Image (cartoon, rainbow, N blue to C red):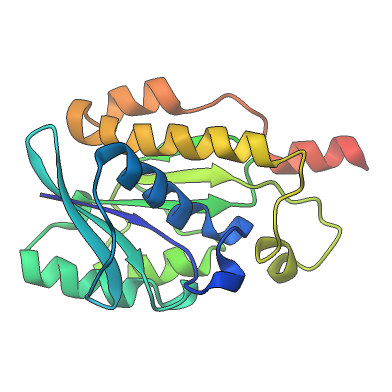
Length: 198
């Protein structure tokens, strides 16, 4: 069994913000798989499906971003899962807009949602899919991530979200290495992007 969890904030005001790329990816994946993510359990909205013969739980924590791990630990305990059976999808301001980065382990960096996930799962060894939202450095980070993407960025993020959904399926069906080879993009980091603009 696997859990695919997208990080985000509940509530209409956050629905299409940069910080909700994880939620948006779960919605796209649910539509692709023909499943509804509308059961309220484990402090999250969940939906059950199958991918490649595996039972899969799609999860959108309803705890707000900084407490995301509070919904994952009860799932881990209830289903008796190891951390490496959790696939976490989230936004990353250090990656260029629309870039995708898959990794099988690593630190949470400055992402508070991921800090909570690592704390509650008790491990840094689990698959994660990072969706680049860029960072122009022009406004405080909190306002940036809770803001809506520009018209220019929207098609790049829509494509990245679609690829992130496909990548989550590939991790389960083909394994992490093959998924990384196929979906890791070569786009430069947001820091390099910012340097060009200065």
